[in-house]
Image (cartoon, rainbow over the protein chains, first blue to last red):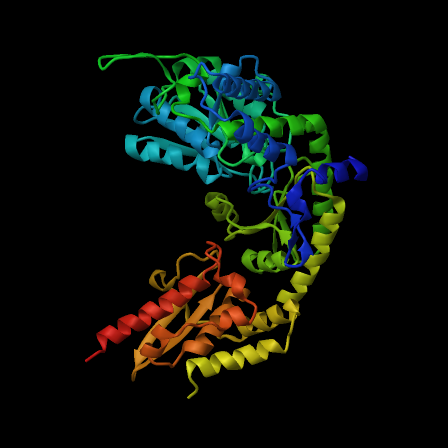
Length: 407
Length: 143
């Protein structure tokens, strides 16, 4: 993207005009949540101003209109992720919510005592805890794929972990702390051979790259709307055709049924079976607006732009003697994690904030990864479509000043 | 022996010298962090850790002759600077004075952001712990 294109993108984000500590905001905490373009904010206020009513219920005009908007949003999500049947996409509150729905559902009819679930060392806590809870309550086991010295996944070790007791593989598509990508084809191959379902956590891939679920063909795919320029409290649970039929719904209530009597209830088929109660209608509409925003620019273009920023950041940070970069790679998502000598990430982040630069510091909800690297945490900068090379330059310049101050 | 409010006033006048220059203010804070002696490793126990900090803070409170004595440490230098400031104001004061001290100086030296309810920040928890330890000493040694 050239400067003009990026300026046009930046102009759509009201928050980027904000000053922080008397400095222009440089927002590099996109891995935690991404800022929202005007069209997302407007789509939601427009909904409340003109259409607001409950969906799938009323015969009146507003209810019909909001139902159409909601189901159109599902179609938008399906197109975005290259899924032919939109019913395979269930709206949730986010990645964490989605994984919990899968874990609790599989606990009912798939996972049994003694079963093993394979995870990787660099999973986010959200893709560890639901499985750990199941394992503790049901006598199951978690098997962890180790990392190689460059922090990439050790696929040979992964293949050795597979056993007749393996019942599920749940791995992240992109490490939220390191930005490294998982070789999904390798995971899928093993899963298919042994007929083991696999869950792909797309929280950190979906915001940065084209994700084609027909090609990746996971059994479960999860991601968050708010990391994709949409509102908080939105997310996706994608189910393969098989699991759309077979995954037990762990929550029930209004809107999920054909008929209810006190003796027996018949449930609807498809996505609605998993969406009891009144959903986050405005949020879902905002999420669809965010996907429209992304697709107007194009995911490939965004990916290329962010790659350029990561390469620049790696190159400039690499010139600083004190800086150690984790998960260094020429082919990774827009995430860069580092430490400055023995300085605590908290100190570095606190001083960068004084310069108006927002980074994340700490363990990034990946304590097992931190333990494997033998560090308490890192400083993490994550980029989005609206970030610029000038911002990366400014960040590195101010980081040098921070290093001086802490010396 | 200066009172809590006298010590606060002293710190406020030191920070006034920096005016609007936040970099100088933080460099001063960092220096205070560096100058604060580390506590003995055996004092860095689980019970002495103050919850709610992204950086770790250990606080060791002792009571003698109607005075509280504090030593503390942190693995982050800015946090340690804040710790040093709190110790400077509160150590060797009576538990009564500590419990009722409003401690407004933090606001006045431009470090208000450290009082936010953000989980990353342990200053509020540290002040709370210093006060509850003092209150406990007060109750225990009342008679």
